[in-house]
Image (tube, each protein chain N blue to C red):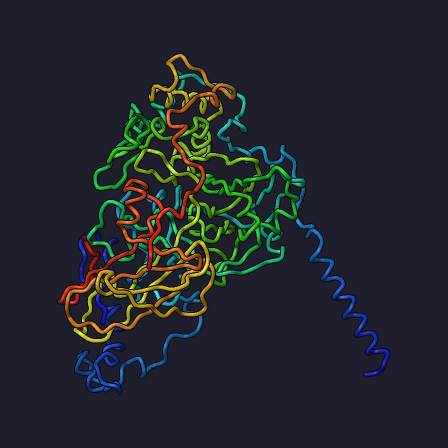
Length: 430
Length: 190
């Protein structure tokens, strides 16, 4: 029922083709047909399918272990990460997660967004080492096997690039939610609390910052305040039930729940304790927020509350005509739990509380849903998140009134999708 | 269960519990002690105040030669950056942009934006040249840092930089950063 329409751009930018979504549409159209009891004949009429016995019921299917590591159905081939625009290299680059095809809250490992500064290194875990040194009593080197013998924990946490959602100055009418919000993932992470490792090396009294360094060709570095390191920071080797994917830092990455993505150093090889921040390139010339007066904010780490409707969203189509549609989306806050999410279909004039899917976890993505009966007229769909601190996701005007339009990072304003009478959904151009 | 067997079970259980309590309270004791010599090749960070800068030195003149050979292909002969047709972003501009930070089109370069000269050394050392990171010698790193600073009119043409002089270079935008996060700064209401 929610079908994508064609978008301009290169093939890599295009949203999924009709077939993948038609499958879903066929199943749903019986439900939205309007009858209280779904009627097969209505489904037939709506889809043009006659209910003959399909060929896949007449032969044995694929055997086990073909392949040994399972992959999605070939009919889902368009549910993939995409590049938004061509860059000068493909190693210092970004790919976006197809949030429009997401269900629930967990991002499959193969669909987690990528942001690399020097490509994905190919690391032999047996040769990987983590060094912890600086203002510590016992500098230590650990192999992966040794790290994985430490007491472990698992938690679900979102991870969002602070450059997500480029709506400061204008919106691109061709962008769907993959392009506007696709630098977001939520996974179950398994590893060792950083506080456990810092206990092991003995934290010096002067230690106030931790430099985390990656083993990629950028040797990516960021400074992390000690309070965060001792609170809920982890070094993680597990992601959604398996080892980290290479794109996510295999064999080891830092996880700072609620903090901007760049600080969650991938391919983690070194932690150095110091008494002040290290002023690396990525915390001075990048990942700083330029204000209208020419001053820049530095060390703005937390990702504030944000939400977005993923369905219906830009590039899709309400193909079933007027009637029932479920509005569904994602909300998250780096400050803790989402308290509630409100949805508007009239551009923010009236708001309705959405249902939140349990469990609602701190610094994790929550799925919200709201029923909607579309009258076939133009509509403006919005969502706004309110977190447990009482913080309310701002409108675009409220955000740029304070920060101007040059700060680039940490855009978290309300996103608006417009629905046209023909059912086309697109990013709202004010 | 006989009395003696029951007693043995109790003792074993108590013993196991004691082992697990002890394990939780002490250091894990896994890993290997390491000395600075062991990880010298990894200890490459240079801090804003110059801590971590290695021995060596380099001049603007030496840096000009290195820049033209290893940097200019992407960043341009004068550090002006380079656009690539069909691509967004282009290769970073390193020079100029002074006085633009509070305008509608700010140009963020090493000269106009970066608060510390040492960051230039640190970043080039770890990540540049793009096709051969960690290939420049310390002398070359000082020299190429000096040349990029010279192109921005931050050091004179006869400058020679080393571990003492590089941290003393005052960057034009050093005072341009607010280091305390003022958020939540946007107060919306339901």
